[in-house]
Image (cartoon, rainbow over all chains, first blue to last red; front, side, top):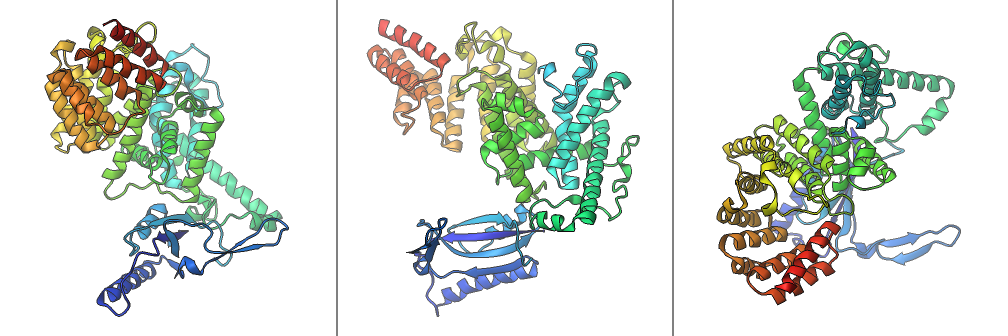
Length: 120
Length: 456
């Protein structure tokens, strides 16, 4: 088995369903079902949803100079990093299948093997 | 194919010219069978580099021993057995090395141990702790399991699918397919694709590293149709690059067209129910059959209508006809079959005048619908002009959006204008084509045509 990081990018400004509506329940149900699928299939390692990029702070270091702190994400992009999963999969094909099943309809998922994880 | 090009392994191919049979058999072995054996071993040991090294060593063994001992009865089975033994030897040596290191310097081993993805050696995962022979059939005398042709074919298909995996970029797919499946050396691939040898070597190394580190599998998916189409696309690109080079250098590069056609034929044999694979065999056969007539003595392109049809290779046209028939019988249409049908109408027309242009125009219309490619619209316009006169072609061209920077758009328009009797406008269109810096052979052709237009 290989571990893969799935980085999920989508437009954070796209309006989602309002909490309390039936649509919201369905939306959250999709995520819970996905998480359960990862757990049942032995793929789950970890995962998290991130707060919007408006909360992001970028710390830039360059040699001996004082670190620079800037407001905002590292890169301004049309679609933003919104969350990640760390999964265990037999090979890249399986990891790609897991990414395809994420309950996000518009976006892009970067799939990368983990090279080293000290706590693994 | 050049007999002196193989093998590239580090052993000489025996006394040069002394035994032509052995030399031929070695070329056949490396071009046709090395990929199959790499495929089988790489899926068995899940280590592409190991498989490749073991096969390269096997080819070197063949070059060393065959001149004396003679060619074995079934060379692919021989290579399978020898390469498998080589692979196991290498694993044993690596394992012994690891154990030795573990004993003398365990801290070194711990620090250099790669992470969860990289460098897992299969001896850890797949062989018992004591390095006993993990493959009972691996001795050089017995054929062993996996040496039957079915396993070799399966290996070939797996390797093709791996090389054309969508997680690899197009350039890498092309390079790996020619190198691993096609059995060309890195030098040959570099020359064929007109890139420097270090660049090509690096491209191949990088692709293989991604295959290893990202764990791209050598599996055949449950529904492989889409992945097979990806292989066909790569072979089609390779063929096209050789058929009419867009780069500086020779206009036609036969090693590319030959390799692509050979691999298309092999793929069609591996997936006989995939209609488009037969379509690509047919297409490449019809085009390859005309190769000797496509350039004149100056190296300039000869238009289809002026080619000497008596020199077209009838046997290869026959292969194309049979493949097209087979493709059609599967009743799964696709772009390669449409293109092959167009090529068949040309290849089977006794004279240029006998060409069935109305049918060709209809087929190009279908191809436009399938591909949406503006280049195909250009061809559609030409076919319409041949079927219904230059004005029909010019009307189609007027609908074409884009390709303003493509010299063939302007040269096509120029030819049609000239045939429609608008010589002045034709000269202007030829100038536009020439201003876009077409390849050398085409430039000479366009200048001749421009002179004809300004004299008209």
